[in-house]
Length: 348
Image (tube, rainbow, N blue to C red; front, side, top):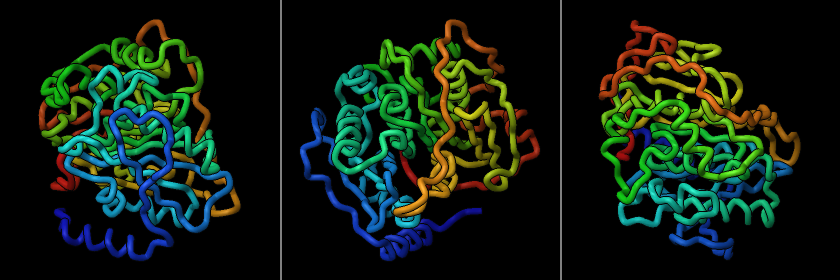
């Protein structure tokens, strides 16, 4: 069923008007920020103690203000007492640097370093819980979420990505990769996993757990990228690429949720294009913040992650072919789905 964009925007505006606080630009000097990423913070009037932090990143052509107004994260921050930081991409087109060597490397530069240093500053100066820092984003913002999961595993506990691509998929001198976007960059699980491990050589700590969403008729970032993400992150965690469980019709009709243990989850949205609409309460549950309350209960901590050195790739199911209409994944809903259509809320 098609959803009126004006209706969605009206609901978002009404939500913003009911908030306890307002979006404010971060003016403190928080460390190296080589590309001058602007940061905006939503701090509710009542905070949980210690306070979690969610970094929320917009799509191409978007802004921090648009993502603040167009998602429910600020409203949920009021309910649960976490802080949300909305970075603003410094490029004229509003896309994130997810391709340069600097941004893909721990402390190497690019947009990711500015975001990482804001997180470090927040932990040191805002009372943010260093064990509960999370990232989420849509399209280009989902790509940056994956960059942060790979390059800064020491800072983030989990990520939730809406319609993105694997870490390193856009790597190169150009900001855009047709090969990756069209689902034509096919690698082994080991190759994808090695890209993540090369982002922070020698890192031996716990890796952030990762949840990703994708639509089967996405013709901006083709759904083959969904399968490549599965290969990548199951390899990083040294687990099978065959789901341990799969729930159809979850979180809604036409969606399926495949879990690969506690650290990797993939949600496929049948008939949905670019992008999958944000499911903020679901993302919050993935972060372990659903029962968080301001000033009191710390909520449920995200399940622990385990670092496993991987020398060989785990078994990987044969992925479907690339293309705008991807073959249904048998373990992710079967061939009888007729999910929602349209939902083209954002450009990349």
